[in-house]
Length: 130
Image (cartoon, rainbow, N blue to C red; front, side, top):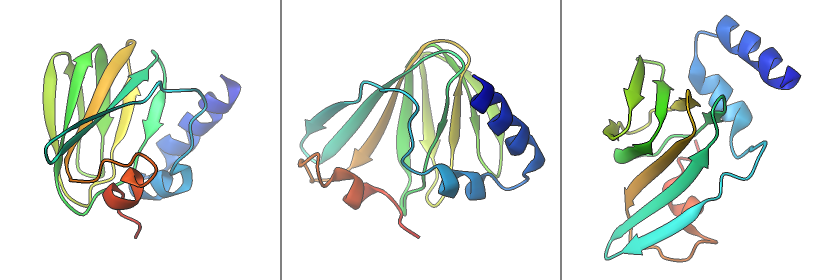
């Protein structure tokens, strides 16, 4: 918890969330219980986020949908800060770094158009590596 508080103080001092996301890319302090869901040309990543957790994310070179199936969150990007309550469907614009802060225990889905079904390669295909 102490590390989280220190990190929140740093975040409040930063005006550009993209820098923070690049620093935190791929780091989790807990197991988000990721479930991979596939259909023809569609991939949905399900994550369970506990109350108080802040998920630092990445960007994609294309827009995609995110679905809040359970709970309440604050989504922050360089362009906006907005609170959502489930059920909610959001369009995340291309090349937008986004942060998800769980105000309650949440179930969050990221939905992508892709034909990749190998979970060992899925992040290679989806993540903007710039």
